[in-house]
Image (cartoon, rainbow, N blue to C red):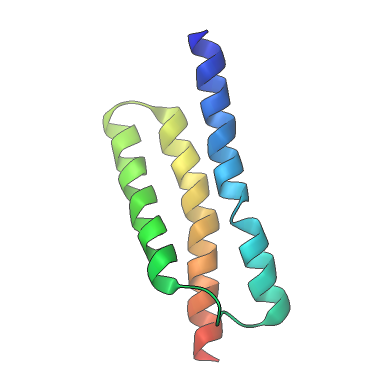
Amino acid sequence: MKELITWLFGISLLVNAGLFIPQIIKILKTKSAKDFSILTFGGFNVLQIVGILYGYIQNDFTLMWGMVVSLIACGSVTLLAFIYRKN
């Protein structure tokens, strides 16, 4: 049972990261980030960094790598929001 829950947790972390993909696509298609809260996505980035550190300290590499993937996806949204807000 423990292995099943660990596997489901790992999959849920990948799904979490995947939920940022539509935001990336929307920004790239519209070339606009006017509807995106940089503060909110910045907060998500901070939470994911804390999750990475926690996973590392606890030797929970499923959590750590899942948060790394989420940080890459969420960080991409944040970066694109900054880029398209300037333009």
